[in-house]
Image (cartoon, rainbow, N blue to C red; front, side, top):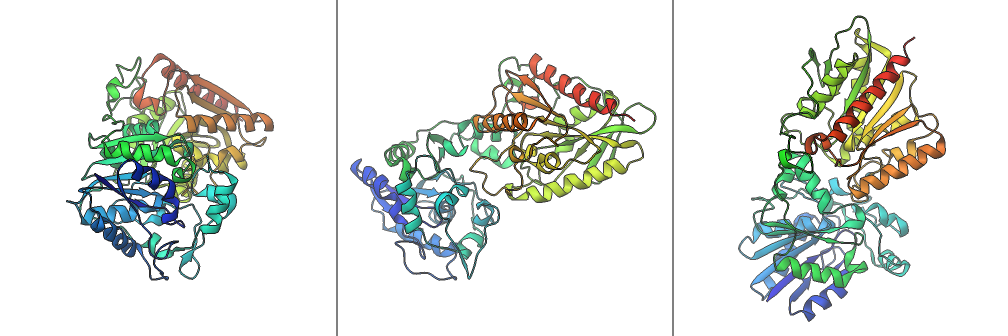
Length: 498
């Protein structure tokens, strides 16, 4: 027999698990929804209630289980006390299930995964109301009646549960683990595979035979929108079902990609003279006089320990060298997008890099373009909404143009879909034909908004390309897309001369 210990997310309580728990018990499982201190159904708690209090609540539930196999399930914030309890009962917890939850590690606080602008008052964070729940996750599948129930039964979250750091002696992945992903919020197996292949190094831990993934086609609260399907997924997780993500192998990443060797760019470009100026590198052309410049803005989030850093990666080196070969200055910047909450800091880094590039005597400061890649695309919002006169073009490669619902820590200011308009500079957009659905949907919304506003957009399609195709897909259509986009940007800069 298996025991499921169920820990809910912020503002909610053990009540949310009622229908899911009934189905698990009908299947023969022992089920213990945890009533956390200070939350609905739980013991009274004041501002002193912290994450450690909730870890102790979960430990009591684990210790009370009669079944030999204990599966801990953490929804959203609930993964923090779940991991704390699993770390303290390594021989008792057989599996941890991340239910539409983040990936905290030792020293991480839950506040980093809350919507941007989350504020406390008198030691508590007030629960959302109505459609504001959508800032905490996708509302897909929730009826108006259920949303009203959330409003009525929600309780303020003690601030210290969100600010107190998680403390772990071992790795969160020291035991069998299952991620149950609610795809309506943008999370899914394809996204996990993308992060493992191209994201920060910490995601490599997900490419393990001990880690499996299951999908639910619903929103962020599956215990309320799809309790039967959730119960089935939890039973499957306990039985070690789930998709396994393979370690990244760029050299064999897809159709036609046999020549995509690790550490290479998809075009064969020679090195160019390079100068390093703080966070910025300048790749210089063989040309006299001040030249136009293109600043390349990488995606992320990127771990601050990642080596090589983005500007020394094959992708940015390749783009910058290729642009320098076309007669313009190819500039790169290592901005500090280390977490989803870091977009304001990254935006400041990009703005400082722009000023540094424009001030260089070898650069024509009146002819500059910005080229955003992947999640760096969100940083284009300000430049699209109020472009300076010297900004002659904006290029976007497989861009993220609106954050998925699960990226709730992103500041609301970074919404290119809402920023694009008639004042936007000429746009060049490389659209990957095999893009992740949530990103592709945002691209289509962006193009619709641009068309309605009368913005000038050149769309370059790479039908067989995936997100981050410079790493994954070295194919004729990706090479052609990069060449065409670069020439469109450079031609626009050269036409602007004088």
